[in-house]
Image 1: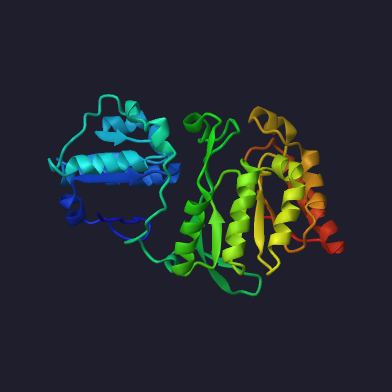
Image 2: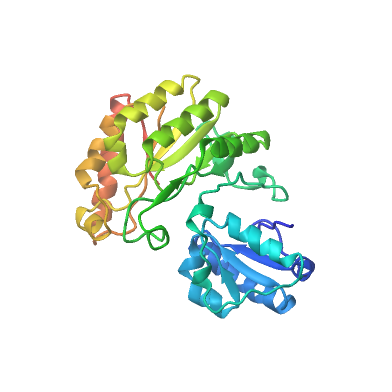
Length: 327
């Protein structure tokens, strides 16, 4: 098996020609657009290969992928990818029918058999984006997930039509094992890719405790909905007790829809008052708080929103609590 990260390395015609199965990972819209010419090229170079696509954006683009002769899998595709690969062994270049790609969604029970990622063959972590620290130094960054899916139904989110308001907790040993492997590969900071780290707050607490116990100097960042920060402020306090060795963390608050009217249209539960209240409640100086800028606002709201964030930052810095990082 050959893994190629086409954002870092080139997928060669020789690699395409030797494959019986070529699977494209489509985790987001950008990756899907970038994969389009690669899918067409793979079909030209190796017309007999089985083409497949998996990841969040594969089922969202099932019709288009089916027209390209691509077998469509979902985001939890480990078991199905293994089945596809095994089907190539007795009869190389075996081609599954593509009449109804959505019918090949993984079975519910197989979706829960999470496996620790194997990154053998991928570029070293140092070739990817790094974390710049305040003193100008940089940390090598790894990435993992504690859950998949999301229990929220925000109308702008591509997770909703695939998971339908459900999420699945990845076993702690799998998550910690993945972190362990990346630390061994040089990671100094871990970015959790969960859409909302507090979808399962108890699970999140156990993950943080396990990681902090084994890697007390490892820093990490998470994304948490504002409503969950306000609801589970006490849990942020418990995490602070775990981080006695000055384990830093960056909580990226999902404040991208500050305007209440826009938030309501998009199915968001937080309101502007919650955004203003949040920094005062999350009172740990070692926890920098990044508030995402809005991408959906009414005309004239952006300046008011940014001024509000600046006022929060100035007030908190004056009180010695923290700095609110905004971009």
